[in-house]
Image (cartoon, rainbow, N blue to C red; front, top):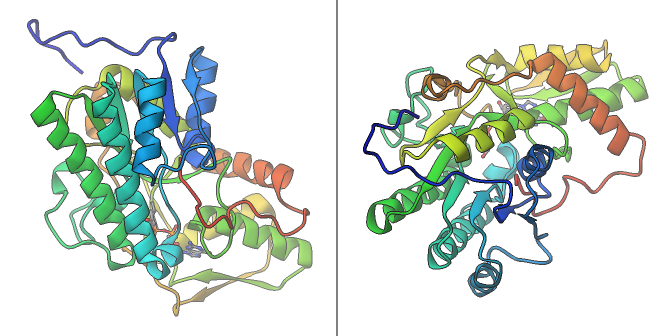
Length: 337
Ligand code: GFB
């Protein structure tokens, strides 16, 4: 980010700083832990959900008072695919609001130097122009299938921006496209489309099934960002970005669910038929992010979708396929971070 001559030169994150990754075992949090470890950060603070329940304000305050982290990546969230969001709205809004309120409030009380809050591309209006610019936030009604989650994320954004305005904090907000990668949730009821298709096609190939059902009409379009790209972008933003405005993180292109299903089937090596089930919700027709604000700062995604799917499939084979019906992903508290 261009700093004019007299803008305060903010301290930037250093390898010796105490860095708390909230939700380090989830899809995003585990990618952040890998990225910061590889970078040489020596002082990562990590807590499992059993060690620290982020929905418990007293526990979060006590943790921040004791550990006093310098930087925080707030990657913990209650996340899930279209069906989980649609069927568990109260859990999605309550848990994500609680996490945002508790962590952001405690960060301020314990004088955290900088915090990065992770939102989602689903915060934007269902029918806004594509690609979606950050300024389109709150300019129209949300997608009903994930409105509670989106409202909680929008509240988190406004919490950060209000604290920045009133207390001069440095809480930045990144809005990623749909994420996938190692550590994903492969539970067929609660997961997102890409891991669900990997598992469905793998099991169909193994069982010799003639056809695989894909939810919806196959016509919605989605943009997929590999979680290792997101982690790299988060470190870049923690170092370079100090603007209170939200910033999109994506790859700048999308494909239809039908095209995605055909690509995943090819990677998995499944040659049967695709059957689309229009009784399942399509969700928002499209949510392609405008990533020009981030690319102007000098960051671009680097993992191509096909390569990312191949790597994720290998991870799935190594960690779940062929084992007893795996628990991963069927966790009620599937967290993104
Ligand atoms: O990935 P997904 O659940 O989330 O669904 P969203 C994307 C599209 O894939 C929808 C279709 O049109 C689904 O109908 N789809 C096809 C499937 N087969 C499947 C399947 O087996 N499982 C799933 N899950 N979808 C999420 C939000 O919306 O986006 C979250 O609900 C979050 O809150 C996430 O914001 C980024 O992209 O529709």
